[in-house]
Length: 259
Image 1: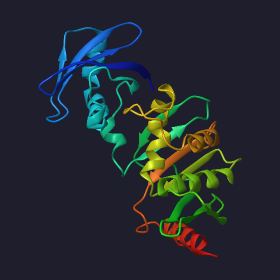
Image 2: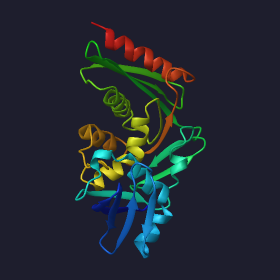
Image 3: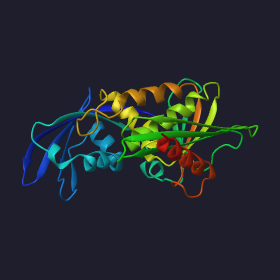
Image 4: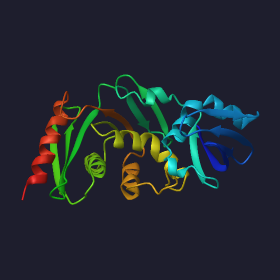
């Protein structure tokens, strides 16, 4: 996985079309983008120009996800892209994203089906907004069929953060396991740890809008927990097809409501 760090600067605007300079340490390229129509045009030639065109789908996602109020002359941003990334595969919720760090390197890939002999970790969280309290649960099924359910009350006040915290608590219980499948109904967790975190780190923990990423402390904790491990991240629809997910959902709700 080759991650490239780039810089963006909006240098002019005319009738809603923004002239944007993209650069790295070796070259520059110019693109024109209309946030309203989503029309994108590349100008000139060169290695960086070719790189952007080859990875146009990924580049468009960055531009499309920028808030409209962040398009103005003088706006600057550092961002990153992954060469030859299969964006469609990464966006397919039915596929499993693998984070393989057994050799100490970042090896992120997509697979259709996970390996059979693997410890399964189901996680879920519950945030009761009206009461400002929540709970997390993790259900562990090991390869010898032994099972363990853990749960904890939490004062964290964000559904996304609580889901992230549930995954952290589950992986903390599996410190000595090398191969784990994390099964979650949170795309925030699944995509955050396998895609977004690389870009945040290269951009000093900032998003494509130039804002500081949220929950940095917790992302760092999760990243530390997956080092030198093979982790499969599988998304499931909440409270539907997965018995393990149902168990976590019910336990997280129970512990959140407990006085």
